Length: 88
Image (cartoon, rainbow, N blue to C red; front, side, top):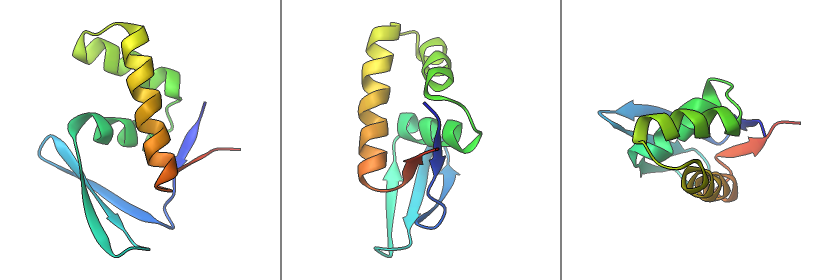
């Protein structure tokens, strides 16, 4: 699945190994852990969820099933917060 950043809602940047999101609707900053930031960065680079999972599996040396489950949970959270949206 392909997602896009909801650029009308958020701005994000890297801060050391983590990331920071500025939610323009709530006027608040949210700190992202390293994994959430890498998922958001992958989305910003136009990567599919499969490509993001593959990169995370390789980087963190975890099973694909575990990575897929955790990535899908993270994507659900990001979508519920309206930081990302399904493309198409």
